[in-house]
Image 1 (spheres, one colour):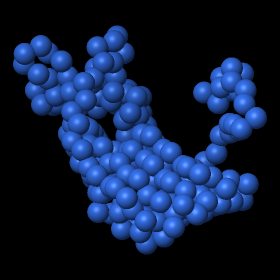
Image 2 (cartoon, one colour):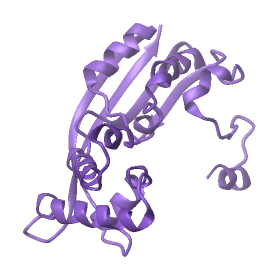
Image 3 (cartoon, helix red, strand yellow):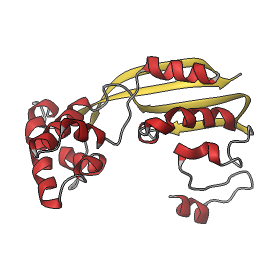
Image 4 (tube, helix red, strand yellow):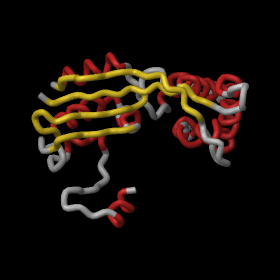
Length: 204
């Protein structure tokens, strides 16, 4: 995506680069207190997965901003896709993986609104809004979509702990177990229980 935008968009005010946001504090060219806004959409639940870099990442965002600058974000919140996460962990346990190890394979962190508000305030943000919204989300109906496609794409890191042939068993089991829970009887559409956590915080 960065390569595409570099080829197709030019602006003296814009710079595009790839960075590992878990280690922003190690790049003084970014964490320099010069930004008006930091915006993150549907990314933080991946970025904050590593507990050792969770707070340093948020602290680095604070360091990026000017005084009065704004941090705006939306991410998965506590309880997001709980049905899939539970089914994936259980299916791995059925394959002989310990429940502790199965939990560790999750690529996500879905904090509560309370955790996020406290973390932001402890770092020095003034929180204007932090909220949770339950937002059922319809899965695509494309050839590689639906629940199976979602599990293979979004849940890939759960599967990597197993050999390829056993990954297929897990995908099938998850889809079979969740079939009734995610499928609407009126039209056969499939929906997952997304929970969105979003907020606005200002650097004082």
